[in-house]
Amino acid sequence: MSLDDDAQVLKNIPLFSKVEPTKLKLLAFTSERLNFLAGDALFAEGDTADAAFIILDGEAAVEVRSDGGFVEVARVGRNDIVGEIAILCDIPRTATVRARSDLVALRVSKDGFFHLVTQFPQVGIEIMAELAARLHHTTQALTAARAQLDIGADV
Image (tube, rainbow, N blue to C red; front, side):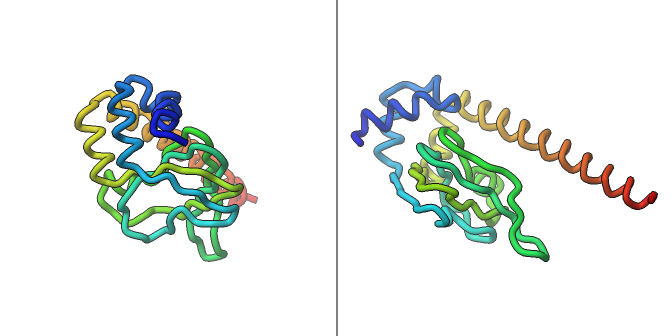
C-alpha cells in the first residue's frame, strides 16, 4: 500500500477522523506497517511499552495472565488501537495481544503517538473517551462477576 492509501485508512478510523490528511500521511510515513500470522503476539504482558498499534485488518485477542494460564478479556479488530495505555501511563504492558487471524497493524512509536496527541488535542479527547468506555465496560464485568461470586457464597 502507498502512503496515500495508509492515510485514507487512518482517516476512516474515528480516532483520526478530524486530523488533516497531510498529518495522517506523516503519521503513516513515520509508522511501521507490520504483518502478523494467527497466533503471533503483537506484544506481551510485562514488555516495555514503546509503541501503540492500530489494527488495519484482522482480529486479535487481549489476554491477561492468571494462575490457570492466559484469560481472554477482550477482542479487537479493524480500526481499533491497542497498547496505548502502557505508553500513556509509562508502565509495562498490562496484557498480551495475540493475533486470532492473519493481521495487519500500523505500529506508532511512543514519540509519534505523543506528537500526534499534542498536535491534535481532539485525538487526545477521543483516546480519553475510548479509555473511559473500556473502564466502564470493565467495571460492569467486574460488578457482574462479583455478584456471581456473592450468589455462589450464599448457597
